[in-house]
Length: 298
Image 1: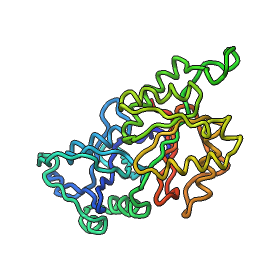
Image 2: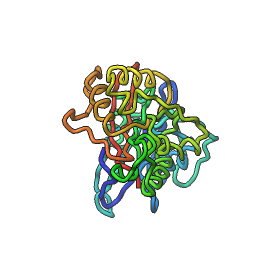
Image 3: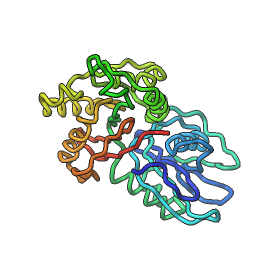
Image 4: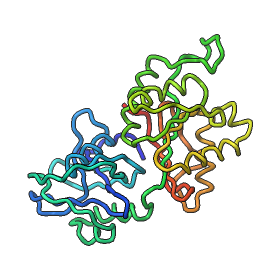
């Protein structure tokens, strides 16, 4: 998945699902059509923020994002429009209140949704959701934010802190990663990794567990053990944030992609891991089913 696109009109939405598996479809009286929850970005919003806000406004449901599904482009009066869709799990809901924008909400099976939705482009989004299925777990594999200069640091490199720019990135990451509803946070030992996820842990009231096997020193002593540890974390239901280093992330992503039981769009010769970036890894039954690269927020 690329960075924020440059189409004329940007919008975001989701296949919102709940155990069953049922997905949400909404009726828009203005157009007399059935659609997936979606809407245009507001000023200053990221695509992820817009998707969660639109879900809440159109359905009354608090949700957490999962894997990216696809981008849909089509022409509107204002020009070219792009809608970015995620899988999103319903977490809490209030009573649906009909309004001028949305006057009916239905929870239906994906198969029933394809017969109800008004547009072929929405049907294709649901079909993509069906291909992946709802994930049983998600791992957010984050590279630490920018740190101070290695050359200028005279102490133990494990203690090298974030730079002012890195601290800003960690705050932006906290806002972005919170949209995925993390259940736990794990980090490599360096202070710059711990401090990268500190604002997220504070915002969500979560503890931070250190895992040396996922730091550069511990990982390269025994890469198989580091990969096994990632699978152990991925076996836990829900969402796990792991903050690691640039010398680890490409190798881990390549390894789990090669071990996937179905093709996953990862180029083994080009696994990016820029500072403050995130790999969103979706798992089903312990196997990788999706891998989306998200550049640094902001």
